[in-house]
Image 1 (cartoon, rainbow, N blue to C red):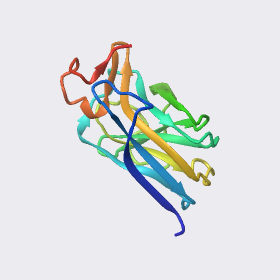
Image 2: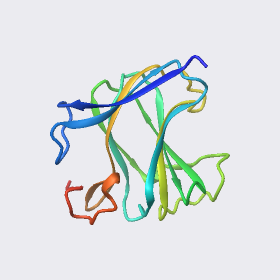
Image 3: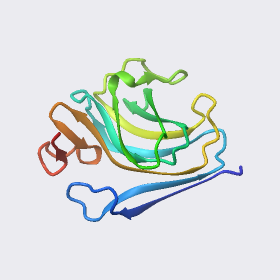
Length: 171
């Protein structure tokens, strides 16, 4: 009770995306969340094999709040939760890159503590209750969720396509 989270898709010209003009980003506004808050629902239509990549990346525009956020992935239909942290340390757009080595098994989660990445079924962003960090209030934006590796970046929502279509962006 007492908390409110509003999310909307908005057009932006301050962050461009290959093949998208104008680009649209997910903008989130948070007012006094309860003990736990996050963006759920990035469920993938089918399990994806991310084992051939080096990590995940995305663009983040924060409020320079100093708050810790978590990027969480699930594999094998929820048989394990793994998380990596990043900090809201800028009010400008910044590219966040989280290598697999940064992901830790989430204590108390069901499943195996082995991060195989062969059947990733969902991912989400958690921005409250990150080890006692429960006071985030503000706005942030996310865009271009992707996996990265030595051959480039692939947008997560396009991984079902053949690699090499417009979803690939070379480094």
